[in-house]
Image 1 (cartoon, rainbow, N blue to C red):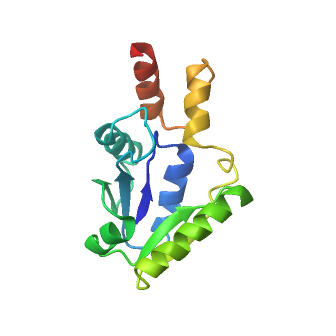
Image 2 (cartoon, helix red, strand yellow):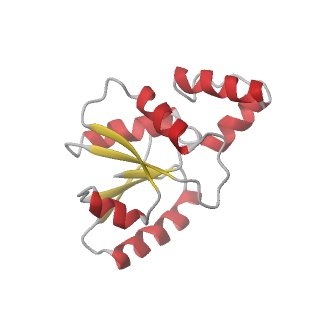
Length: 156
């Protein structure tokens, strides 16, 4: 299972799903409710944006969730929770999260994957800021996300 907020999905997220499919028969992309974050897109929009970004990938299911991550992983019969690591700065938080998840359910492993080097610096927050300021985000997000961001920013 690959949990995240995905606000919005980036090319790095898609790359990690493709990498996970090399190791697992199926991948559940679990799109989290906002929690403490205030996302630009609703949870339903984020689910649909992710689905539209990966139409050719077989074995991937994109679903919303609002429960504890390990509980949702259990509900999905996931054997692992996948997390992306872009830089050393991600590691501390992700390591703590992995240990807490293991404490909550030692049967579910955490798997860390690194994206293609073309995407290691890409994150949703930066993409939104670049789009807000009129920058070109074509190489950072799928085409459907670029259009959705333009529409969202135009209506804001």
